[in-house]
Length: 194
Image (tube, rainbow, N blue to C red; front, side, top):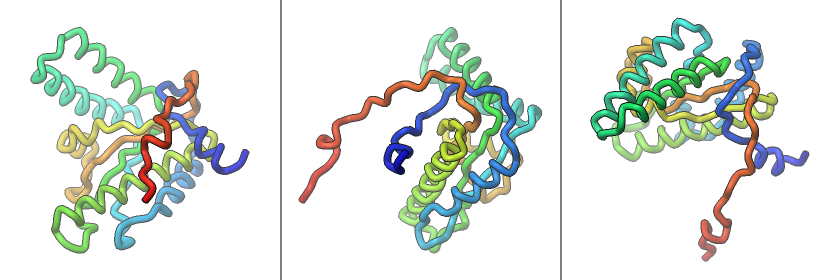
């Protein structure tokens, strides 16, 4: 398979087999993620690898409690809230590995909004590199933004250093999902050539 076809074949996986992922594979994935570009080469990304059931349960509780409160404040029906909470807990417990992608807030040249944005963009680049590295290992992944909506709760649940700001959570494992054809907007509608 040529490289473009490989890159285009990555999909977001929402169901995983229970097969454990060897530590050596996770280390290769994380090492490859660190080769992502970063503004000023500051490498602001930090990774929290979650595999234990105790930490998963603590994180699931923190994230879904915040989700429940947010949905209640928005006036969502209780049945819908409960369905999302149950599904979220299932996904956290089902994926063999969770990687919480964080930004080190001190990894900037200056304390400006532009520097913060560049650091966030750099962390996102590492997240994509991580997903592609998992794909190269024959694994599936799914980028979840829940920690971004519950940064304080995520920090407390994972006992993170004070300078680590959660940005996303990536679920990793062997796919137990039917892969769908990805619906893409036509490239012509996305590009301006000058």
